[in-house]
Length: 295
Image (cartoon, rainbow, N blue to C red; front, side, top):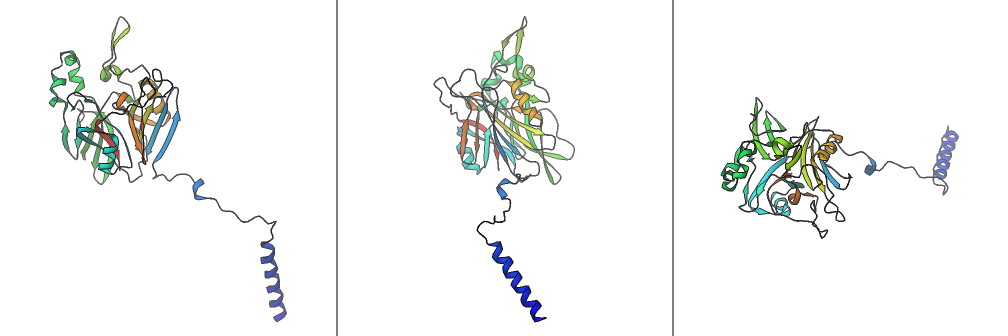
C-alpha cells in the first residue's frame, strides 16, 4: 500500500514538472474586454454615412439611465448643462429664438410646463408665420411618462393626451416627426408652387448637421447627431429623408427631429462634438436654450 502511494506521488510530481515545460503553451482564458456589451450599458458608435459622421448613443430599455429635458433661459453651452446636471451624455434640444432668447417649443419638467411658445411675442406676432402658427403650437414632442412603477417614453404631437394610467413627467418639443413618416410639409412648413419648393426653413432636402431622438421596438432610445465634414462645409451632413433612412436601419420605429444646424452638438463621457462646420472649416459652437440629458 505504501509503495502504491509513493508511486502515485511520483507520477503527480512528474505531471506538475511536465506542465511547466518551456515549450508548453500556457492555459488561456477569454478576456472580459472581448465579451459583448451588457444589455444595460450605453452603446456609443460613430457611422460614416454619405458625406457625414453620425454619432449615435443607444440607451437600452433595460438600463438604469434616464433621458430628461432641461433648460437655461439665459442660454448656455452644452458643457454647462452637463456640468450642472452631472450628465453622462447630452444632446441639444428644441427650437428657440436667439434674438429674444425665448422658446418656440414646449418644455415640461416634472409635470410643470416651463416653456410655452405662446409666451414668445416675436413668434406670436410674426405676420409671416401666422398661416403656420396653429401647427407650430402643435408640433411633435418627446415625452417621458410614469405608468405605475415603470417609466415609459413616447414621441407624439403636443395635443395628444397621456395614455390611461400614465402621468406625463417631462416633454420637449421639436419636429418634424422623422419616423414612422416624415412630416416635413406639415411640421417643417415646406411649401410648393408649380411643383417647386418655395419655402423650406429647415432645409429638409439639403444636407446639414442634424440632431434627433428615436425609440426602437423594445423601448430603447437612440440619440443621433449628424456632423458635417470640415473639408466639405457646404455639401456634407444629411437631409431629413436621409436621416429617416439611417435611423430606420438602426431599428428605430418612432423618431423626431431636434433643433439642428448650428445648434447640433453632442456630449459623451468628457467629449463634445459639434455638428455644424463654417466655410473656414471650423466647428460652430452655439449656446442653447434646452438640452436632453442622459443621467
